[in-house]
Length: 253
Image 1 (cartoon, one colour):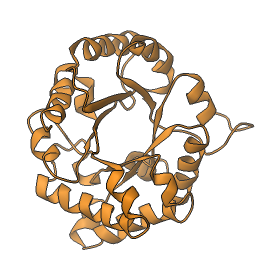
Image 2 (tube, one colour):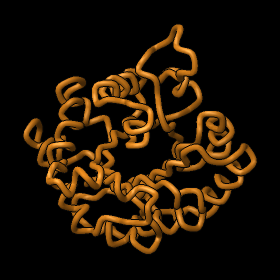
Image 3 (cartoon, rainbow, N blue to C red):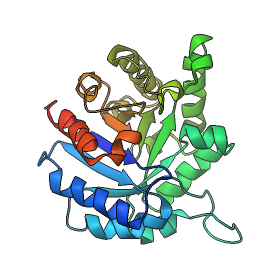
Image 4 (cartoon, one colour):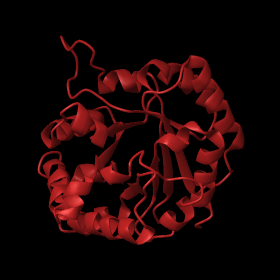
């Protein structure tokens, strides 16, 4: 049975003091549910401070990005080995903001995915379509292409050691959320793509929903059979809201 995962993507927000305070509130308020995994992904400068705050808790540490390179003359890059050294267990790859704003292609995302796995980090592979792609009927083709670039590179076996996050770009930070039925349709589509390569892996991989998830809509989303939790953006910066989302995930079992 797949466990739920609630992952907080703090994006480029906070300070050392604010990150530590937020972490303290999440650690002290987290429901004692064995069925829900919880993860926070602070900005690079705060990974060490947050990691220390998480020590001894059930909450895992993740990063928001990783270099596809191992080491060398890559000014400003952060390698998977460096993240591992700081205690990270997860890393987000292919977030829509990096694809759109930083020009990351699906090929680069696949390289980052592979780099994370080499250091035994769990990559959270983000896929999703823009509003224009959805309304023009290209949603399935876009998501299939994003997935298959990884499947044709690292391969379906690598997906067994990863998490997938479906993030409709039109719902990120906009307040618009896909209905539970809309989200379920795409999650099922993603699982069907994986099943063409390996049915067992398709059935076991966690697929998260990301797109303006909040405490008051999380339960409806998480009740869908192929939605295994959320990749939470803005709501993860509010401890009470983030904990409500974790509680909604815990209430599904």
